[in-house]
Image (cartoon, rainbow, N blue to C red; front, side):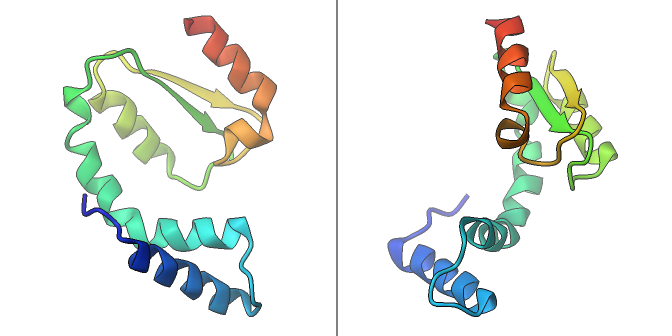
Length: 109
């Protein structure tokens, strides 16, 4: 993964602001812009998942924008990974269902 410079980060934010049509982009718009800029790194990262040697619990929302087959592929590649799907939420499970995420964490701690 290539380190991002302050200039690149500022340019990324400026692009999101322009798309927002306002002087200041929302956090969601900044996040969307960042995700769109970084998607190639996710594919490269999956190649390294098999080297993970710590317990992993993948928590996804049922309405997550990622495809179920992509989620399952992540779970298959990480040795011993546990997968949990939460109802009534999308990609940002910790924001949408914080109590449910806390319960999942409590189960493994």
